[in-house]
Length: 163
Picture 1 (cartoon, rainbow, N blue to C red):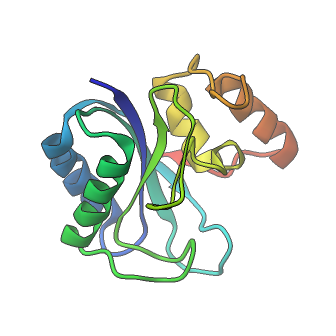
Picture 2 (cartoon, rainbow, N blue to C red):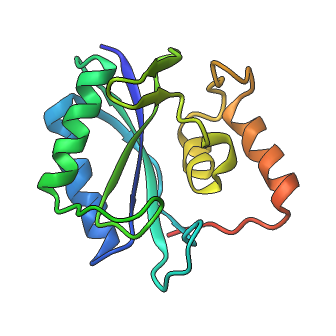
């Protein structure tokens, strides 16, 4: 089965509990192979009081990318996600970061894999570097570890911490 690498995030209610529920539900979409440590991060792009809790999940799944995206969006609704503004607060956010080593642009379902801003997001690269430090980004040709180091050189001090 193909390997999907998913990013999960929450900053409403009990974020850890929200992520735990999401990981348990992901088992219905395939085999959860591994879950990265949970990471605490500041919200990006807006001023909010609640920090995000994020993680990365490795999921072997029989679903093709567009079908998996539909299933994830349905799961978000089931877990209580309500529409907010871009990068805004949310009960749960599920994103496909990578799908095997494929590069996918599907305008019909608004799916872009690898996630287009992954290399700019410490809260994704940090947990991903625990699970797959040598995974090579299929477009950038760099490992997750290299991308994380480059980002830290730009940002300076890490802003995310392991819970």
